[in-house]
Length: 368
Length: 125
Image 1 (cartoon, rainbow over the protein chains, first blue to last red):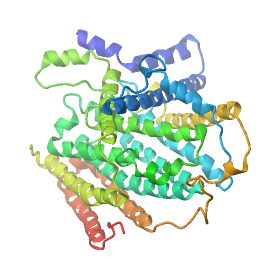
Image 2 (cartoon, one colour):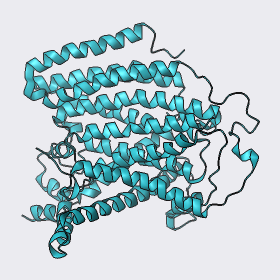
Image 3 (cartoon, rainbow over the protein chains, first blue to last red):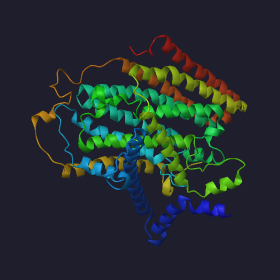
């Protein structure tokens, strides 16, 4: 009994319906006004979480990279350098925005909008906890894959409109890389959609009530998880796939010509995309906000249920992000030909085979 | 089953809110930066940054056609993947008929990949 009470109080839908009641019944606002206020609340909340999370992720990466390289990382600003990212953000805000001579002004200004909007919309789809999900389409995961691919457009535009040879090469590399690896992401998501039988994000999370899909799906799910991690690393343009912005060859790649906060947007979106891909991985493979359940261990499962769902989601995201950051500081950068070979000659055939295997397992009821 | 977003609002409305929030973030930050950042003019600042030496030739130059080839390949495979999604959702309901139909479609995808591979389209030259 205690268990159900706890999960009820941790349901965020109660909070939203309480706010809804307060606005409509207690204050007697008409429903359009209440909806507008709620939209503004969601927007402000989204903005705050987006910015704070990006700042946290910058610090998170710097700390992990420091420990991997036997350093201590940022320690001066605030305890454990917690305020370092804030200081950096204010510093980047007061930097000059340089007017360039040859750029295509409209496209140059448009590119950061596309990059940020793509990551913001993908971010809004993630299920943060029980009842804490902003957009819940019944084709949720498809919507997520679709909006996150808008980011490529922003990067291509940024590189092309800058009128700089390095940005052009960086953008082209980035485009080729991101569209190639998007195929792998699409196919491994498809494999998991086969298993879940629904594209709704709520449906996918509910389906992992007893056991996470990583364990439910046998070998194909594990293969899909590994492929997803590799493709997600490439998709976020992070090392060892960071050749679009390989400093030693291309200065800074597609965002060389952007200065001040203009550059900051690309930086922000890059870290947010890291969170988004970790969020999708935890949603598809590790049960989203569902607690860790082991069949048969009733006591253990009960204890796990007492941890709030948002904590579960964040822990899973941070663990997966840790792995992706770990890749960056461990492996050397790939060449463009080996990068494309890895995708088209290895990951894509394996992925197609994996899809057949998953279909067979579901269809014939095979257990491996 | 129709599912609704947060506050029981329409999903499309919430997607629009997310879109406007993203646009608002960029707009606000640029506005603030425009207010508090310094401005100074120098003719050299407007030049493209390429190694620090004066730029030679046209900047928006021609580039390798290989990228274009991979974009075409991507388009082909991605659209085919999109067609597989409805089947993945309805797989259990459609049963053997659906499996047969999708097996033929899937064979075409694999043939496409084999063809591109044999033609050498996957090589980076």
